[in-house]
Amino acid sequence: MYEIKFLIMKKKTQKWGRFLYTWLILMIVWYAYTVSLAPAELITGFVVTGLIAAFNFASFTHYGFSLFHPRRIYYIFQFSIVFLVALVKSNIQVAKIVLHPKLPVNPGIVKFKSSLKSDFAKMVLANTITLTPGTLTVDLIDDEFYIHWLNMTSHDEAGIYQDIAADFEKILIKIFDK
Image (cartoon, rainbow, N blue to C red; front, side, top):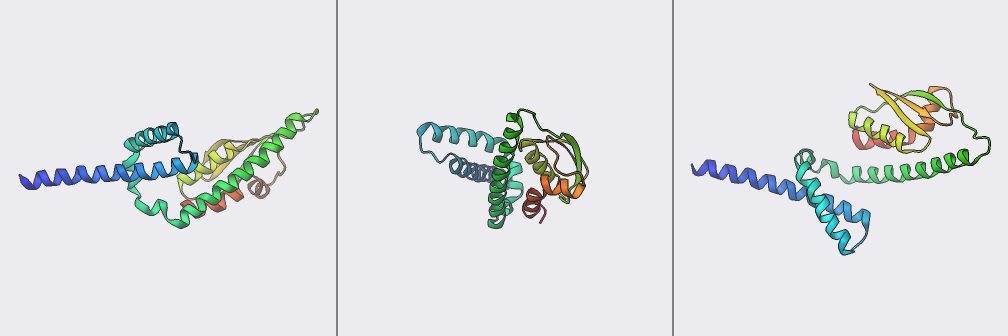
């Protein structure tokens, strides 16, 4: 009887620890992004990260610390910088197109093949492409991405890949497929 009770307590303690670990990591990320010590921000971060941790700690802790390996964190940071630069460039390009009196667009649906292995990495790439103004991921079938491109600058698959996804994919491979 005592053994069963001890095992149940141990399992509950492990769940609680995994929840706290998840909550702590999410709070660090929240405060790193908000960079604010305003009481409203602190309380909001505390509540929001607590709710996210409560519903996601099992899947979050399934991978352990491998998600937070320093090399992986470095590449995530690098990916964020590359994405922000691409976001600014494409915003400027789309603004020029929209503000031009003749609206010089060359739209089309293009296809390129990705070398990403992980489904999650492919999903991140698809969402990154969609978040970049002027491109929209229409479909993803196996390794082939179908993208609606507002102003096509390339017509061959290698050029399309280079213009749309190469910079993102190089880093995503280092984050997810190693």
